[in-house]
Image (tube, rainbow, N blue to C red; front, side, top):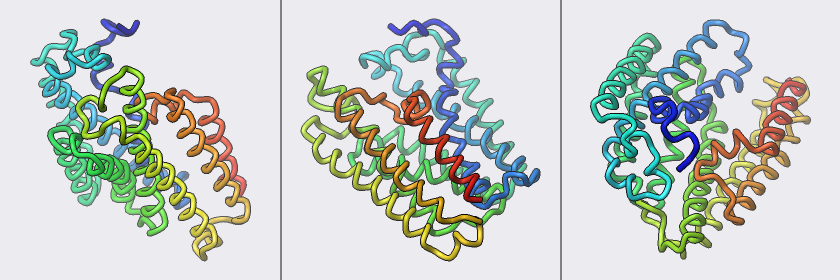
Length: 295
């Protein structure tokens, strides 16, 4: 049992570390060079908390529904609800509070954002209840949930999203979703299991995922390269040629993630891995520097 078991059960059940994913709502702001716009930044911040509160509410609902199955899982049995550290009544109450808070923030924003958040919530519930057990469909939904965060950022601020950004996002997030499943299967393989727990994959699917995931990631790099050769770039950046440095940085990071997963060392959540891996943080910092200098 992890050392954190028994400590701060509500905070762990809310999975606050997963709020990192919701920083994607700021992508339209950064892409449009509107970071210094106070009104747009505030709208993005409200969108961030709306997604975060809603996501945490849905995590509680998911863990409550899966508590019996989680108790039989080697690691998920330590989740607060499955371990009996957080009562079902408390989970339901906090879920309702957070859901109301999330949608109250959505109502305060543009009407389009409310629609995006509603679609996110419905898709998340459908994923937890059924779609996560359907191979390939599950990773498509995960990629869509990531992309909805970017759509939400655009809807909250009124910043139009380009074809390039959405295409890049779909390929990149599909690759990351496949990486998550590949890491789970590698863990199952190491433990002598025949498949990933509660998923529609078998360990002999590992080679197929190893083909699909990197290919999707590299397609995202190709989309980025094509965008850098488009007319839109010269409007936003003073030195667009420097942006080509983003391609090798992204190629390195995607390749490194798959090397780590292939060796069975990838965290079950690639987002957690990226947030704690020094090389990933260095790549992110270098990418931000390139964007800043180019602008």
